[in-house]
Every structure is written in C-alpha cells, then in structure tokens.
Length: 462
Image (cartoon, rainbow, N blue to C red; front, top):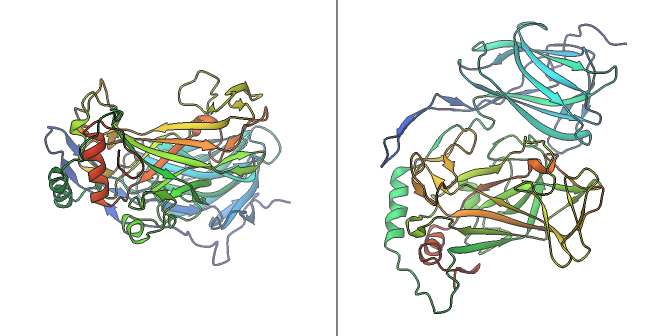
C-alpha cells in the first residue's frame, strides 16, 4: 500500500543534499572585434538527489547499479510525487534543468512544479525506454522564466498507463548543465603562447609531400566511466557511460592541472596529455570499445596560414547527446562501414549499418574550427566556437584553430539487431575534447604542418 504523505526522518533523507559551486561573472570585449560578450553570473548547478525528498507519495528507493550513482527513486508510476524544499533556482533568467532517468518501458513524463503539485510548470521530461531500469540517461530542459531563489519543487509523475515507467537518480538546477559558465582565458598566458608560436621556424617541407594541412594523435581505448568533467564537473556518476581516450587519469574531477600532472596517455605522441571521450557503444548489451581512434588536427579553411594553436585547457563538444531522431541511410553525420565489402544492409530499425564480415563500423565526428579568442569554454560548451563559413573564420569567431575530427573504428560488423549508444540513438553520437598538449609540441605541429599545408604523421614529421 502506498502512503499519501511520508515525512523523511532519516538523516540522509530529511535534508536537501546539494553541490554548490562558485559564481563566475564578467563582461569581456573580444580583442580585434567590436563584439561584446556580456553574460549573467553563472553559478554551479544545485544537484538534488532523488532520495532527499521532504515528503513523497508512492516512492521506494534502491541502490543504482553504477558506481557513484548512489540511490534512486525506483519504479515510479502515474500520480507518484516527491517534494523538495529549499531548492535554490538562482536569479531570474534562463535556467537549465537536468534529470537523470532510466526506464525499461517508457510511456510517461516527469514534471517539475513550483509551490505545489499543480503549481507553475518548471520543466517537463518525456520518459522513453532507455534500455533498462538501470540504463541511465541525462535529459535537459530550459526554463525561460521561473521564481528566483529558494523554492519548493514537486516532481510529479505523469504516466500514460497504470504501470511503473520511471526511475530517477537526481535533478540538477543551474544556468548551464556544467555550471562552468563562460571560462575566461588568461590573456597574458595566451599572449606569451602566441609570441612563442610566432618565433617558431617551420620545418622545411620535402619534395613530394602531400599538401594537406594535417597532423594527428593516434589513440587507443583508455577506460570507461559514467563521468563528464566538462558537462558535469565534480559530479562522479552524473553522466551516461563514456569511453575515454588519451589521458588515463580523466574522471569527473579532471581539470587542466590534473591532465598536465598525469603523464599517462593512451595516445601518441606522448606530448598530448589531452582527454577525449565519446558515449559508449553497446551491441546486444555488451560494450564495444573502439579498436583505435585517430584524432586529426587540420584545416578546412581556404587559407590555413592564419591558424593558431589551442590555448592550454581549451574544451568543446561536438554533436548532441539529446538528439533522438531516426538516422536512415543518407543522413549526414552517421555511422558507416569501412573495409572490403562495406555496408551490406541496415538494422531492422534502419538506424544502423550492417557491415560485411571483412569491414568495421566507423564514425567521423567533426568539431568547430573558429573561436571567439576570449573563452576556454562556454555554458553549453559550444557558444565560444563555430564552424567555418565560406572557407574562413570571421565575425564573432575570428580566430582560426585547428579543425579536430575523430575517426573512430569499432571491431564489429553489426547485425540486424543494431546497436545503441549510452546516450541512446545513433543520432545522439557526440564527443568532447579537453586539451592539454605540451605548448611547444603543439605549436611546432601547427606551424610546420597546418600553416604550411603539409601532411604530417603522428610524430609531427613529414
């Protein structure tokens, strides 16, 4: 029998458990342009554990199957609810709200209301089948208006049937999913890096070298964690499962300093201590790790000679983990087959290729290559960068940076059953970069290979 109102009396449930971070606020003029980057203070998100309700109806708890996930509110059905007191929604303005949910069946939604069960709607998360009751995905919504400051928030289940349809691990309330906001670059350090780059003498290009602006890092699989130090910094287990490449110490608490301090990397060259990651791929419930990933650094510009190296600690994201749309053959940015025989069919749902036994599943992910010249990161991890337009970088993004792309090879051919990503559908494929190169090693490669429009190898030589 489900109680209608059960006060939470135990120490772990009787108080709101939150993670609070510092406030970052500034207004910065971009050098060399008339654009003014103005933004409001960006506070780290308030993370509310699902089990820390003050009152509830129809809720039972269980321990999550993933390390670091803690407990979750389990097997929620239509009409069940939880009340959270004192949730700080911050100042007026856009509010990014996330929920970590899992479901074996889908068929409903989680609604967040302020003040009462039927109070103003703050956000709504549609719940679809994620692959199981412990297959976690993070959904994000934006509230364009909301009451400011500490509020009472109700999480109300709206099911389309009589059965259970959702598990909830936590909610996050903040100005951005990461709370990092706009991360300003140290202009003095950047000037010093550019001055050193300008003084570098490019290596002479031998005759017969392919004139393509390019060098690369070749990376093997390092480790897997449900962490994302860009989107969910300092929140272990807050993300779906990621496959990490490069720096062997990458976790939820990764910073530029920890990357540089840890010399272990699954990439060559050793001077690249960057962290790269993608959502884990599953086939019949088993994780399939890439057999190799080549991280290409190049240029798509008509004139690559203005390209400069990345500043230390630069980070960005390509793709959209929230995209859940069909990707039939011919759709841009999709998985494909490489090797003898190529693609021989499609999965039953049409979203995945089936490769010949002699071919492998592949994906190429392209990152933005124009930068605002001011910020190492932005609230959505995309607003400080843009893709080049008409062969050049200009306007609010005048700085040409190397064009990064992941070429990912999986040791599988696939079947008609298809695959799933930790972020679910094929359309949700995405990648993150958190750069920590040795400045000299990166600068010499950009100067000799990209600026001179000459194809280099992993060692940065011709």
